[in-house]
Amino acid sequence: MRHMCAAMLSLQAIILGLSVPVMIAVEDVDPAVAGVIGGGLAVLCLLTAGMLRRPWAYWVGHGIQVATFLTGFLVPIMFFIGLMFASLWLGAFFLGRRIEADKARWAAAEE
Image (cartoon, rainbow, N blue to C red):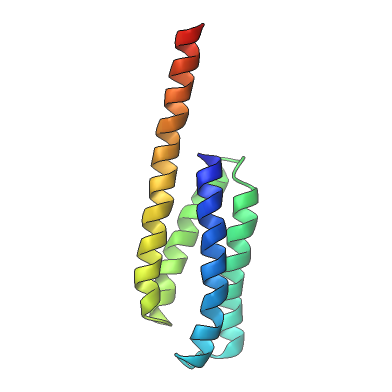
């Protein structure tokens, strides 16, 4: 689960970093605001991806998905991108939990 969620957050960090110039050039968002929001979320994605060994980091990941969706108020296409990454995050989260449960069940069956 950790690896799939970390991969999703890493890809999301790239997209959020690339959203900064779009916020500035296309939507005329103040460069400081765009940098703090887009760059801050990108850095938070990378930090959270590295901390997924801790259970609370998954809650931070859920919060990042909400914050990404909310950037749609600055750049409307981010509503779609936020939904897309939230779907990928939840898919990785729940599928990863199922895979880990299956691995534990198989290990118990082998003993």
